[in-house]
Amino acid sequence: MPTRTLGATGPVISVLGLGTMGMSDLYGPADDAESIATIRAALDAGVTLLDTGDFYGMGHNELLIHEALRGRNREDVRISVKFGAQRGPDRSWLGYDASPAATRTALAYTLRRLRTDHVDIYRPARLDPNVPIEETVGAIADLVKAGYVRHIGLSEVGAETLRRAAAVHPISDLQIEYSLISRSIEDEILPTARELGIGITAYGVLSRGLLSGHWSNDREIAATDFRGASPRFQGENLSHNLNLVEALRAIAEARGASVAQVAIAWVASRGEDIVPLVGARRRDRLTEALGALAVTLNAADLAAIESAVPAGAAAGDRYAAAQMAFLDSER
Image 1 (cartoon, rainbow, N blue to C red):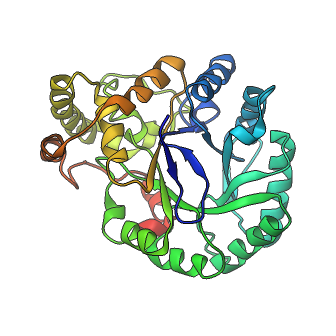
Image 2: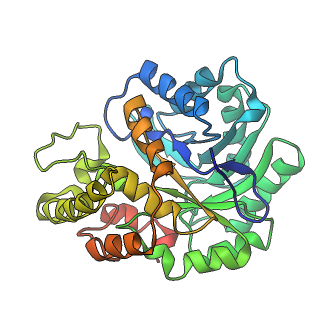
């Protein structure tokens, strides 16, 4: 398994990471036994970065990771945890809190669920509009000094926030959506991150499954699957976006690869400072994603891919309007 270093100050990790959100939340029903088996298969294949959030299934996702790591050497794995989103017992979203007290409290519960004495990368999931980023990063910096956190990350913040945060404490990486059809970070955020020595952990590399090559117009979406309200999966938007996928499929098949593999390989090709997170919930999907490591894209391949799916080609925003308004990275 090839490795990359997260930014100038972050850890050395596998070139692909595993995002585990869908095993607990937001993508409809999942099977715990298969989820645990998938995490273990990823670790066996050399994946060393596991990404989670304390609000994924209200702690369920962290408990899954704990079970998957049972009997393994904790130091062989890097666990990245997001915090801040507030949830109710009915799974509702109640707001956001990244205040220093909430930061410390959230980490205490995370350490308990994971049965570990530290988190490798700890990050607010969003910018709290009521709390200066300096206060949130300062609180995590105190946890770094105390040994409970190894590195500080951020998620879905813009260039100005990156600069303010980095002035308080070194930032290992920015976790943000980046794919063939989500490329807005290229304008300002990515150059700023590179200037500051901040790596990128790219989630949504398959655009929530849209670029997987397995989605269809007639696919039924479960009531608990947030893609049912995602603009890119609606009506004419979906038809338009699936046409882009078919254009990409022709390129992939000519190279003996799947659509998903080419989409993942494209993100990985964007720089040594970018680590794609794959959100496989099953071992077969994990195996397909790992196959992207064998896909080498030359200049002609990249030109063909970007001709088939040019920047800005997607129809619909990546989140519903209310969620887009909460993204510092989209302002």
